[in-house]
Image 1 (cartoon, each protein chain N blue to C red):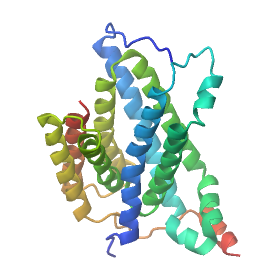
Image 2: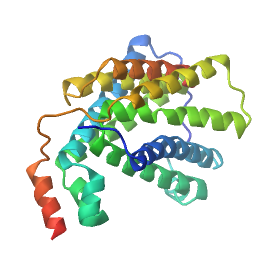
Image 3: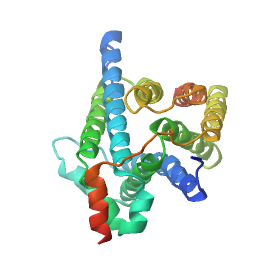
Length: 148
Length: 135
């Protein structure tokens, strides 16, 4: 059985890689624009959730988790984690070309290593070949129930 | 949030312990979540058959999934604790890159995934790359 990915599955992996770093960036940007929040006033932390940058960050992280779970349902963990590490490279490139932050030689070396690593893993099968892949009974029963 | 600046007095053993706690909780969470998703089956297919509600129900009725999320939450709080004592420039790259390697080991041991030379190489390259990028 060939476990090559479809275009849609590559799209899901792309979403995993993009949503997590972008979500973290939105949270970071939102939190740094707020006045210092004291643990004595935790309500102000709840109010922070409704500011645009933090709300966007949370939405992106929810998108990340949904895509991540979907990817894990058809690919190995040891495939998904390195393959989605490309998000780190995207953030570094965004910081260079969008925020005009300097990138040291060390970081360029990191970008090259991650890119080569992702290329390595992406060339192989996404899922380990198993003699009989049997979903647990509860899940199958539930799916049947859902069909009805 | 008024958090005291990371103490410079944290010893190497305490720092290693905090990073190890993050890596251990994170790896356990990832492995349990991956096992849960494999036991449920392909979510795309479930969604095609039973719709989005069916897919969500398949996930939220799997106890293994909640065990995984519990450990991931534990990893998050371990990270917050570590950041209270150590610098972000140490904690973030160390935990992110070590987790990649421990996940490869755990994937082979517990999920019986085929971690061949290609995947080991990828995990190590990405691990070093993340370290260089975040350091």
